[in-house]
Length: 324
Image (cartoon, rainbow, N blue to C red; front, side, top):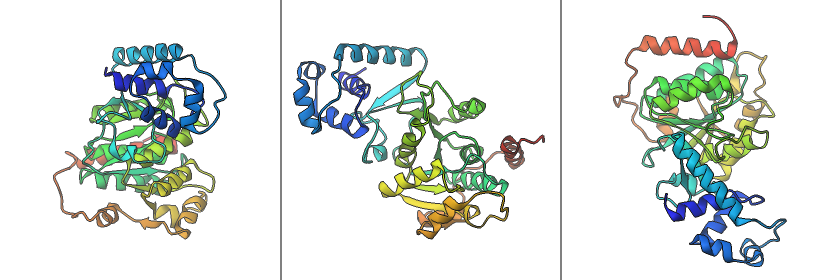
């Protein structure tokens, strides 16, 4: 454990600060002793606002030490904003997390990733398209980033894993609190394939209503481009869309989110995105074209196509609640 990173970990735990304010604090202190000795007035000066509380720095140092010990004991890791290992695209966003906790291996900074999110209750055709696009880009070695939620997130993860590439899931809870519980096996598969489960929340933090919108900025921050596959008028996926636009990322919608045939599903969110100018993705070939990639095979193949087909049938059954 390096001292610089441990200082970042302490700062990340200080309550009452916005993510960007924690980065200001990280940039303002080099040694732990400085943090303990500086006055509240100085901290208010560098943050340019009044604090609504005073911190017992020893308390938060002890909390940081406990979290670091728990991580080492339970095969969890963390990386601070100051570390060279911190994902470079995430570092560039307006409000990056001061610390990222993860299980598995961080994504290769030299490889672009695709964010894919959408409704938890998708139409069958949207679920299938999410799987197919994620599988198709995976066959070119492109990893998908999503949120491990039911519906579109799960289908995107499953399709990408079927191609044999590592996948990445960002949680709105601690990385030891996989939510929903029904996706624990999917989380294990992501780790088994060399990917990672990531979160800005320390171990033991349960999911909450406010944590999911915050985690969406990390999904888009890690991604080169983001596809909103299908989303109703009021959807958390649209929060991801707003973050993607704010971060200057490509924002696309999937064709089934615009012109799906089944009128029982609410697509007003993705339809509005298209009306506002989001480009429409029909297949993985559209992603390749927008990223200027050749569509020739690069060697990333599923060993047995029938296994992939079996997987998609089983995956569809998960959210359709049917037996296969």
